[in-house]
Each structure stands twice: as structure tokens, then as C-alpha cells.
Image (cartoon, rainbow, N blue to C red; front, top):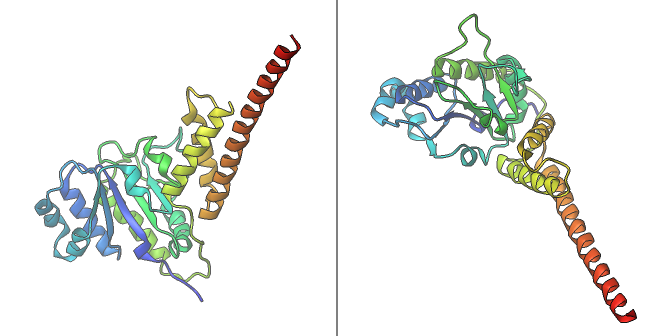
Length: 261
């Protein structure tokens, strides 16, 4: 049976918004396009009265259900797919999708996966550290002036997803690993790769970021993350076993030499 986009699985996430009026405008833009889930992380000023002035009564339900977090990692932990928005290009932001292309990709993912669309602070956007949590990046093309109002950016992305969701599709993506599961895997990979001297212990995040980009292109399902973590545990066990066996052999050798003497 054909399935359309699941808007209940798509959440707009505002990271460190500076102005409550912008939060209200975002809520109204979401309401226009039929989205209702809004997460706000470490807002500088969460003045509900100012938020409601711009949200208006039409978006009051969106405002009432806002979830507030203090940190990005916790806020994203239960999502299976995270999209970061960026005005800057180049550097670590080489592979960036066009809004309409991204929207088409999100339709099948949304059927069985929770998606976060992440927007950074109004004055500087998402940092390189922030985008490490993202599976994909999206850029809204503009003319000479690339900076968009936060609510304008949210409206454009929501509009493209809304349009893409009008067409039925026969594809759906099975449940992907959550951010919590992925972060646990990356921590375990970093630990084991440092211990076997595969990556530089003085700058392990540089190498782990390469792995993040590699796995984000797949992306991984929960079972696949479990397999990778199982391999890491086996490497850890075998390394400890070899070390223990080496110590025992050395002790036996020293004991034998003492007896011969």
C-alpha cells in the first residue's frame, strides 16, 4: 500500500534561539505547513507572552507542546535521522542538499523514523561541532545576501517537505539507529581505535569525524550498530586476552629460569 509522509515523525529543532518572537514566528510557519512538533534547546529568552504574539492563536497548540532541552546531545538522542541547516559551505560542509531534494528523501524515511530538522542560532548558525550530529545538511540557495530570518528558513524547509509529501510513494525506510545508539557506537569506536593505535590519541575526533561522514551516507539501522559494537567488544576482549596470555608466558618463563638457576 502506498504511504505518504508522516508529519508526526518530523520535528523542528531550534538550537539556542535568541529571540522569543522568532520562536513564535517559527511555530506559525510550522502550523501553516501542517507540522506540530517543536523542540527548543537552551533558548536565551523563553518569554511565552512574546512567543504567542507572533505565533498567534492559530499556532497555540504548537507552542503549548514545545519541548525544552538544555543540551543538543540529549535533545537529539531519540531521533533516527537529523538534518542540519547551513548557510555556510565548504570545509566540513561539502555535501549539502537542496531543500527539494532533501524533502523527497525525507518522505520514505519519515514513515517509520523520527526526523529532526535542526536550525542554529540566528547570529551564527550551527557550529562544526553541532553538525557532527547530523546525517545530512541542507542549504537554502539565495542571491548575494545568504542570511535568512529563522522563521523564513523554517517555512521554506517545511513547504518543500509539505509539497513532497503530497505525492504517494511505495517506499519506506525501516527504523534507523537513533542518535543515542549512534553516539554510543562512536564513543566505543573511538576508545577501541585509540587503544589499538589505529587513530592518533591526541586528536581522535578528527578521525572519528571521517567515520561519522562515512556512516551517515548509509545510514545505519539499529541492528547494524549492534553488530559494529559487538565487533568492538570482541576486539577489546581479544586484546585483553593477548595481553594476559603474554604476561602469563613471561611469568612462566621467569619462573622456569629461576628453577634452572
